Image (cartoon, rainbow, N blue to C red; front, side, top):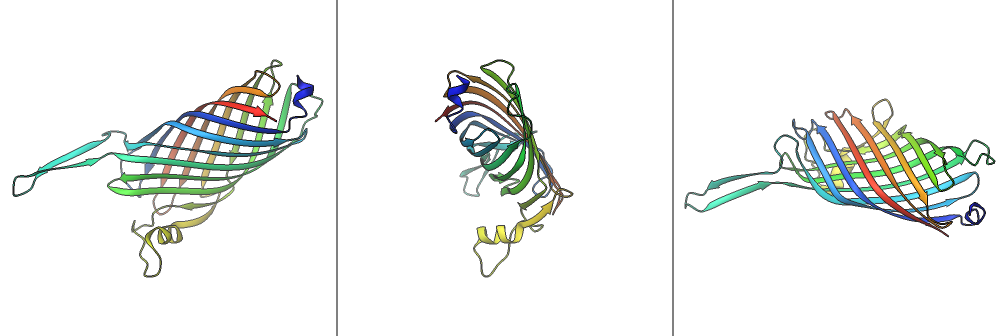
Length: 256
């Protein structure tokens, strides 16, 4: 089986799972918010040799994001003519993530039980909710990160993976201090990204990802597994934001 697998250099994978987000964005609201997406879907393409790996991942989904303390809520009143009016606050939440990484193996290929990889990753992530403190909320990050990954094969068909990366350079887009961009030349969306995007290094932008995975190879070409991913994000401008996201997914891969 291992001999056959060495000739299959490409991998296509699909995943389905859950995504959760807890965040405190002091620019948007003094309240802590909690978001959930069920399900979140993912696609992955990989190409590998004995000493290198290239991976491209796309994931995303839609759910809800509401204050942790109050949840979705509504307000009711009446117009002077007696007609009732109800105003609901229940934010729809969207997440999209795109990642590409390249890794090189640093330990011996003859070691079939474990593999240590180092490399770099380019990651793009966007969080969008339509009602955070009654306003649209967007946090977009594009980062460059060094990566270290360790694979351990404790049985011929079973493996564990531990991966860590931390952004050293990035672009982050958030609302400006006045919340609304003002421009006589650009549309609102273009003005938001133009005025709200800043370059940052690791001393200001905190973006750390941790990944733990388990894989079971059914055949030389088919495998199943589960992965847990956690991300911590912080940034101080124009007012501090801190957020933690978690993803738990079931995955299936085919080699060819």
